[in-house]
Length: 561
Image 1 (cartoon, rainbow, N blue to C red):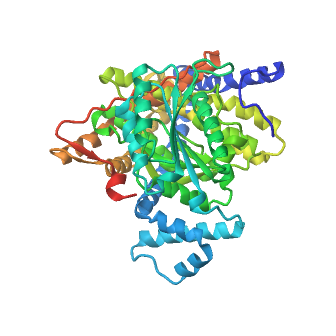
Image 2 (cartoon, rainbow, N blue to C red):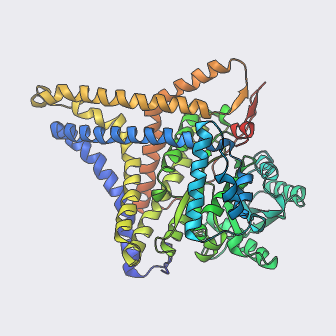
Image 3 (cartoon, rainbow, N blue to C red):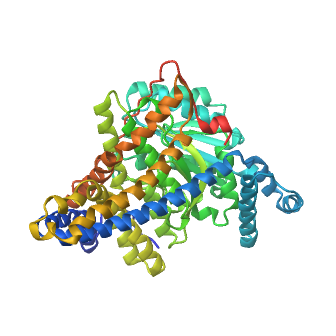
């Protein structure tokens, strides 16, 4: 289905529908919050019943998410020592490989056996599809790094990690998508890196994106689209088919482990619908994790946990941050949107609509590391984290466009429209309201209760119900603390066990975080969309200062995952 994935240049009827759908998420969120406040003041009994019902649904969701967080974390641990190269070479000679592995036992540990069973299931799906992949020697990777204000301290670790890949480097093309409006010092740094790594990869080039292009907004999507079009011409000159190219769009601070592109190549090869799929790793924020305020560390750990949970349900998974996809699909859908901020999720929806629902995201249980948003001091870091979360929440801009496409499409199944449309809407609604209800509004019926409610059985039972629910929630928080400490990178630092205890206590800031770094930026984004005050792209502040007398090792490098 041909659909213009944009809010611009619409016909009057579509423009009115677009505007209505832009208003809807913010209006429903505000009605929910103000309605509960009104009921808490004037009808506290009704408010208490509704809030208890919300608590019950919320705790069920928390317990459900905790179970799948543990499952996902277990799978991440299972695959950290996988020999991806061996599996790739086996797929290159599949008949002989199948005979070979059928006669052998792989490992005595239950993790190795489970990993092997997952591998066999992938091979069965591949054989059943009869859509065998190209040989690994014919697969190329395009890696795009958008740059506007990132210096050598951010860029060089990222490109150095690419240069240490165990995948053949001459099958990698690295493109720096450099904004023309970047400062001269930044441009010089990028060109210096290009010169340094020019002969390391098949190609390492810098593509300068003009500052003002008609029809484009000042967004990352416009920059990386310009770079991808250059890469398309490069592959055509080298007679490399787009079907054999995997494109990865990485934030400038993205540091990958040495096996990352082997893992990505494996998942691309075993996916029967590889040309209509994106591939989503697990983002962790470890590059500067030891040098940021505690609240920022908890916020970004929560983001990683959310992605771990989402990976357990691929049918509803949407691309987030640094991810990969078939270059053929990217060209087919006419690249990333050039007038939207949320390009990482927008490209999934654009592809999903283009292929009439025949597009999916494949989770990869491998991590890549990025920076926690940080700045010169505590307050500036607070502002940077808030703005970053507001920008992420601006993904709500996809809702009106996706709904217009769903209403128009006759080929996407109705069930899928309802399922995904509800998830998209409910996800943003819950994002902007849950923190306020849990931390503030949920206690209002008890505070503002009139005499008739204060003397009722419900008045005395509501606190007990709330305490029980929050006790169960505390168990989920304990699981999160344990997993967060196990995910932290190793560091040589004095009294490390005391540092870990300090990190555990940082999780006491969760109520504060739910309001100021979850609900508030999400509601802010929805309100701006509702009022037509469209957000402009803001580049997250990243600041790396090595801690004194310490050395940080990323867990992926240490374990070879």
